[in-house]
Image 1 (cartoon, rainbow, N blue to C red):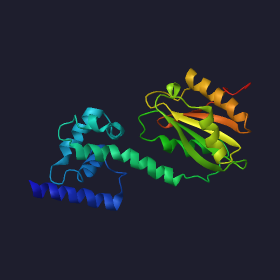
Image 2 (image 1 turned 90 degrees about the horizontal axis):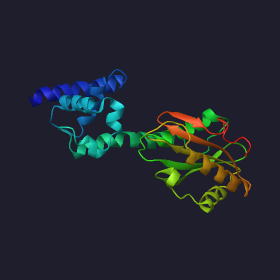
Image 3 (image 1 turned 135 degrees about the vertical axis):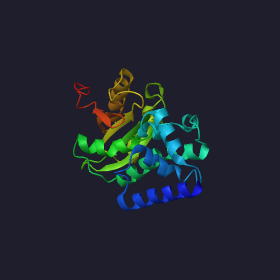
Image 4 (image 1 turned 180 degrees about the horizontal axis):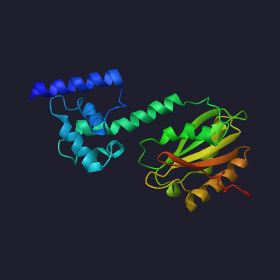
Length: 227
């Protein structure tokens, strides 16, 4: 009955306003979200079907629009809304960790870089320009796709870093479906770019590989030794 559904919706909204989401079960988080794409339907069964289909709340939110629409009761409005959540979260976190941050070590780099890969389904290669005081000057996109197969030109990398007048730089890219372990292609690309940047007086101090909420430093792992 519409009255029943509306009462449930209002109770869930009121609970969120007073308590936040911390005490919510995964299906209740989805129910609350689905209120705004399903103004009249009972969203509880749809929330449960989504969790049964994908297995967890994060898997639901990481799914593509097309994958979400395979679930009974999920139309385009709902699918777009759900897929928007991690993208919006990434933009929020990027804004909270803007440039001018100071980098004193690997943990600072991880904190700065991890948010930039939230919700990404393709590999993305970034370069962070840093001055001699450890201040981040910019974070620029170099390529998107399969990094080992993307043509990242030496000229583009050098121009990007020199534009900021950086003295140091850090590469970062993600493995959306894998582990935070550099492939041979990652290693070859890194060493080539390190040599190219050194020729113009810029020190490539690290390459951070990200997978979900994990990351690995190539420099800390010994890949830069002897280069």
